Length: 117
Image (spheres, rainbow, N blue to C red):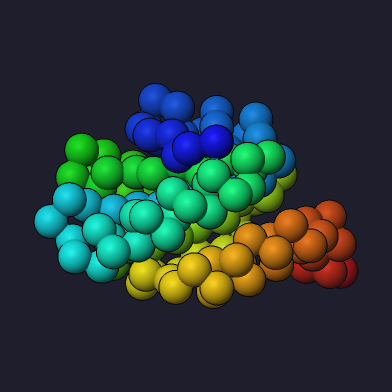
């Protein structure tokens, strides 16, 4: 599955309605963003069971601000509606694969119980 464009209108619904959602915050003028785009697209194709979304920070400035994005590219991952990963900077393909694996393995419920306890 290829990446989907996320906007203020569909961001929350996408994050809440899917088990795992990766979000790439980017801009067309950003060199590292352009370098990361094919790596991100390839991961989206490889992991068709996951949602890979992209937010154009130029068009969605309020959304980027609400997500507290201060540097681009920024990659975020949500699992069961919870933010479980956020990092600025372009990742090489092998590092992105490690993040995908870690998010798949992450136990949101156990983490929530630990933080409550």
